[in-house]
Image (cartoon, rainbow, N blue to C red; front, side):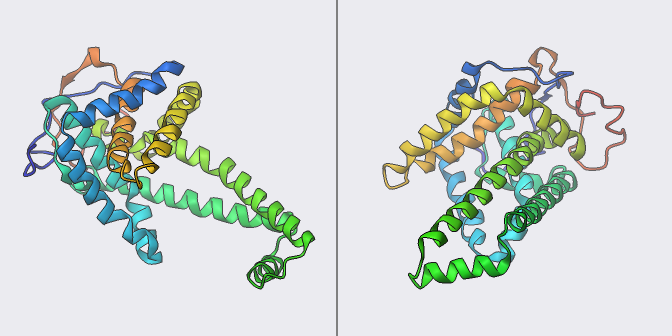
Length: 289
């Protein structure tokens, strides 16, 4: 483990070539993404455990403070992109820096932060639509406050319970239906931006299409993830010290499986800065130039 290397000082000598189109993975490959993610973590378990505590300190306490939580929401793709670059280094050079969480501040920051703006804007749109749905179904602010006060005062009538359950159902179904497309668009986008220098909008589009084409493999991936989360909870939640790194690594392995043509690895001549001399339109398959 080399803890003193920056993303540029320890840059792998090669870069990935993007496929012209994201490939369609099989059901079994969704399981393999988790397995390969675990193998990637096993290359440097001490470094990944150190990463977990850094990630926990940086993100978890702040998520309970409203102003900081909003700021972290904007920075989410920056953090995830940094971890994706750390996974790329580990995959290609067998070196891992637990501080990779911050690599996104040094490499393609403006593009990653732009992803954060789109992601946050999507969250705001979802909140507005949910509010509209509640009004359409007759749950205005006054009725919600009335139901809440009845529940807190333990003066809940049977009809209030039915209305409360209906309101929760509208919220859950609406949140699920609206959030999934947003998650699909953001899932692979940080990796595409920081590794392949893809523009933010193009990365969001490519990620959404890839997720749409791979719903079957994401089904198996989700099943394994659910089971893994259940197991991680059993020893007082200590299993998440391993599971969180594996989830991050599995995002990288799924990106690699779907997008990367490893037979076309080429020399990387980019300095990783935001000032590219050639536009992404000339960079049709996303190779760093």
